[in-house]
Length: 636
Figure 1: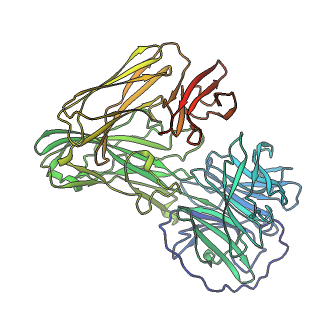
Figure 2: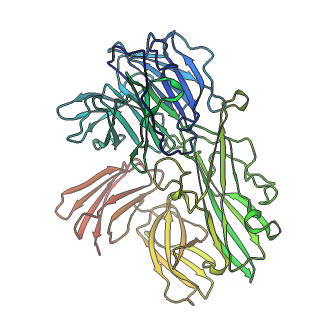
């Protein structure tokens, strides 16, 4: 956004634009400015479809002429928590006026029927740039010191203007911004924050640890922009960075994964960009082969786990996932098709399609359902389902590739504001839904089909069980069919909520005729303990056992610390109910504090890769007790 600009030339002539590589886009660019690059006295905001494509178009153009005298000292932000757009006017320098605009998302994309003259909120806090994260928290900059290159990173209450908490933001020496009054922030749905700040020159940064309440925030310098840029928005894997000068209105695209800045291009729809934000509907899908049971020389029962997640910052309509099994295995070769949601993995309350057969009917869900976007601790933004089937006439010489396709929409088809999104699954579990963490799961290399080869069937699990040994230990036992072919190892995994899994043990396979295995799990927590076994082949392929539940009712300290000894990291596990109330502190043998943090989830990982070998002590505090445990660090 622009805070201290007093004039703008109304005769623009843009000098040449060179197109960069195209990326499939589903995002909507929200532009505050005017509908014409040559005018600054008709403030409006618009939603631009296909913004980085060849033919961008404005779905809406909503006038704010009655609310604002011009475009200066105004910024715009989209709130994923309530799917509304906020426009803030700080031109007075002593107060902030905010209008909250309902665009009817995700059902429709339209201007409000009427926008009141009086703002929804007015208070004395004056922000420099602001942007919402997916939790609905609002972030802003203030109190910049150009000598030290430091400012405040504030989280403030949009309803009252009260600063909830603040932390110091440090910019890198040699690349301080000229100011924070000129520029913009953007926050990806996955939480990453980027900023363009300053003028003559404008610089691009990624801001790290901005939400931490225990450490400073840090700005990582990315690049100096060739021209002044005042707006920034996230658009499915890329940033759009916008500005204008006497030559015209322009933007640059910036590839987050490759860290490449594109060439300047004319700003979309010949509009004037002042401040930007974005609405990003996006899905991510993974598909992993869970288990295979060989019935005879050409028949097997197999199962897949399909994971679908709303990766964007807006709720989506018409969520579905299709899996055409007949196209993979032949319509006459599939039978006994079953589907079921995994326990605890359907908090959205979705309904499966009872008619799904993997052949003539390939939609796994009943039509017309919705999926929320991720906010705070809610877990209604994803689902996992188990898909089982029997296959006949399998060919040992063939590799069968299967993909699950997630689809959804936002907008109203009858109003020509219909946005369709989709993602083809990536092979593996949910951790590979977006490997490069740029918020776009549909890029090259992220939609690999899931392979199945009848010639190299994985280990067949016959049974898995878990039982208590004493108050602080349990034993996990499993039985597999023999002989074991092409198998390398078993990895024992543990969870306290059946969502977050941690590897706690490794059992190498040295005897192909051994069928019985076991693993002792020490220092276990109280409450529910979930276990599963991941068998890994020599070629890296793997298969999971079923999940078993062990209820530990014995009295203990409620924590688990692993691995022991530690090499690169130490993980502290705690009961899900008390996560967020626990402080963990690491000391060396002399009592010097090396690390301290509050656990915000059921596990906390502490990096120890740079610590020397030897004994250390881990102190754990919560509102009920304090305990300390000796841990050993041993690097190979």
